[in-house]
Length: 359
Ligand SMILES: NC(=O)c1ccc[n+]([C@@H]2O[C@H](COP(=O)([O-])OP(=O)(O)OC[C@H]3O[C@@H](n4cnc5c(N)ncnc54)[C@H](O)[C@@H]3O)[C@@H](O)[C@H]2O)c1
Ligand SMILES: [Zn+2]
Image 1 (cartoon, rainbow, N blue to C red):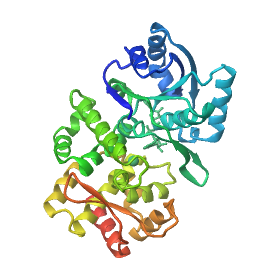
Image 2 (spheres, rainbow, N blue to C red; image 1 turned 90 degrees about the vertical axis):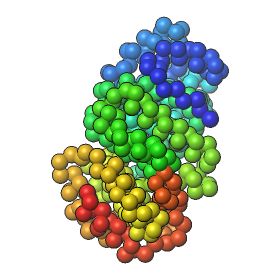
Image 3 (tube, helix red, strand yellow; image 1 turned 120 degrees about the horizontal axis):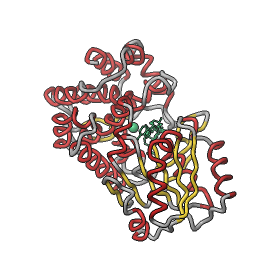
């Protein structure tokens, strides 16, 4: 498993960590335009001080950078700079940089080590952990990729101070998800300290990141290739969420926003099926009621759609060939399971309609 370090400033002893993991001090440092501007100099200066040879690469800060075209451009720059198997790659950014950087590292010279330096809350708690790396295909997101475990994940919560509020909330959806699926006490902690965490206040934010990262790493360790159904529980709220993202063309709603709304639906569905009590439903909804959305977003990208349309979108988004939708439900707060039986459409649309009255 990858070693995950959460500290400030996290790059201070990076050479020692590299030595410990047998990593050469020859590194391709991948940024997007924003992370290059915000923390590029700080990171490259630190590498200089610690005797690294580095090659810097910068990609546009957008989802469309997760493409073959961008990957090819990076391979070219790396070959021209004489990067070879003896090097490794440091991905400094959100999920876009982490996924693309991991993809390039997994394929360049048949694979060089990747070290993830996530800079968004979503990347710190989710995408940088677990080794799934991918680019997008015109027919679907994240369809082309590898399992390529990072050697190290280096998290500096202070980097969140510049992250726009909307991105903090988007990441917070995954954080809350971990409470729902794996740790009831953590869920209570999040309920109590939600405001401090979204304001990036310590020790709350560091604790929330560390706990989330550990929960994800633990799930991944037990079910790396998503075979037993355990890793699939990380998709709590996602079946509904993906339907909303697709209806918004993956552009007008952030993944985390869709997941937050999806978790409302999934909680209600769990209560309808009797796997959580009404009281647990209320507790869960209480945490989710703290999410802030842009004005009009919930109306325009959730409430306006008939439940049947959302259901159809959930079906069309599926990557699997079989026609049944799979839902992750809760078995009480803090425990999740993959519901393997097909559910009636009326039940699903019923949960969506009920969720609309809450949101
Ligand atoms: N591999 C996985 O397991 C996994 C899991 C979840 C999501 N993902 C992928 O992650 C991607 C989304 O990641 P994301 O939400 O981090 O988006 P992102 O990488 O697009 O980052 C969001 C925005 O924040 C900016 N930014 C990054 N760090 C910043 C900082 N510290 N201060 C200010 N601005 C900063 C970025 O430049 C970008 O504009 C998607 O492509 C998704 O498919 C992958
Ligand atoms: Zn997610």
